[in-house]
Image (cartoon, rainbow, N blue to C red; front, side, top):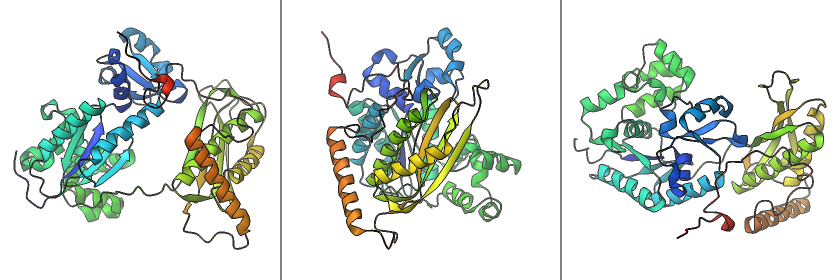
Length: 431
């Protein structure tokens, strides 16, 4: 270990280990040290795997039906996804991390950047303290990577998880240059944050196969042949910060609500029930981030894996007359799209709604000739809907037609209780 210069930034990336599986294990000790997978909507694919399952060679996204034989051989326990539980556990973890520094960027449900400040002479010890606090308070195992930039912190976190010698905390700023170079030379270039599969293949064709190779590359050359993003990655790998901690999450540029159905849907009424639900969910997220949509995209598709069935996939983008967050107006647009897309005789497997051309409420000119009274009434109605749903639950008030059919709703036969968010599912201790 070496002492870091007094002015060097210390960026920490905290990442939950096998997050969904770990959340399940907090409340069910029987699952510890057993092979566990958490499945996607409709119990379709593996979206989280315990280390025991990873050791069996199971890949992320592997369809469950292909794993049944392996599961019987090795006793793999499959659980339906429980996103209510995972989201609540994430919020608890992020609130604890915020106590270590106000400079926090929540990157995903299980990842968070913290700016520990320049110098930070006890950064490694602080990383272990963070790890211990999360384990003690919410029961979740985390890995901590610390470095001068966000890209290096990502790689440090990767090392912390892959190398037991670091005990879950790796501080690149505390390593001597030879040790750091050796670690970077052992990491495939495709692991570097921001390098996608295609870019990784192109880099390998240029004999840039590892993170160390990329670090030593010519940034302007890569900018010419890739993009400015690749040049910034090279700068970040060399300790020059190009990505600031985003303490305020930028608004999403598109909002999607979509789902594979629990059972095939054959009727237009059945599709209508699903799509209206998606409109309700998407418009709620739209208002939550303070935006309005200028267009709505609707898509339908059959199950391409059922080759014996007739196949159909189609989508339509509907421009809206004015920027809006009004759930009723969005629902009418979606129903027009459904009428245009629906074809009888197909077993529909998935549908979705995507809100596009988003603008923040204080931006955009809107329709000059729109009736201001109608706009005020719409805003008041949406505020009332959101208030009631927040108080009584998201399904307290629904769009007419949502309950026409329920066959489309996903399968979740192996879902664990929502221990932390539903009174009737609280864990019970018995003598």
